[in-house]
Length: 234
Ligand code: ATP
Image 1: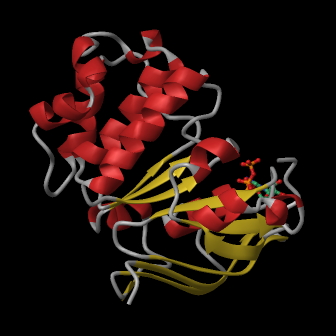
Image 2 (image 1 turned 60 degrees about the horizontal axis):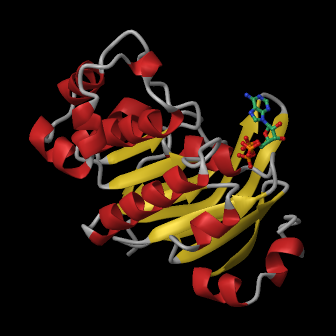
């Protein structure tokens, strides 16, 4: 049994059929990347897994337990957190307040010191308001808010988008560390080089279909499927 299993999921926005029989699995402690062009269905897959969208059909299991149709808050309490592309940091709250709010409803929240140990930069900025943070700091805070809730599985939607290469390098190292410490990560990212340096396995999407599955190392060695079935430029 895999930690997360998605089986033949179909998701629609109104009448628009967006995901077609999407199946994937994520093992405990794996980093799995979802690759594909804009509009291929990657974000919709994360939102369906998290319960933000209800699939029309198919099954989603977390540690063997069906979760499709559950509210996102329920799924969150089972140990999954979505870090959305827009980061959704509260601009008027300080870094520390953002973290405290996130921890309020968590069944087993981390003490702040544990967050500060992982994110020394956030500790330095603990009294800064969300809106004054740099893009990289906001992304760290978005990930930290998921971690403080003791997320076992993190769903990261374009965590490196719009960030400078040095910041991306730091975030890649951080994400690797989280995986090394036992978190399981599903990441959607356009920055193929960064994500391939991080992921164990990859699912390729095209037009709402899973068109590729393989080891990240295989894609690093031979990127042809990215240009081919996934239609990516790189
Ligand atoms: P991106 O990198 O652009 O986010 P993606 O692979 O994550 O791409 P999705 O955001 O999942 O793709 O979008 C898949 C399809 O669903 C696209 O055709 C998109 O236009 C459509 N779509 C996304 N959100 C909505 C929505 N709220 N209502 C209707 N259609 C939507």
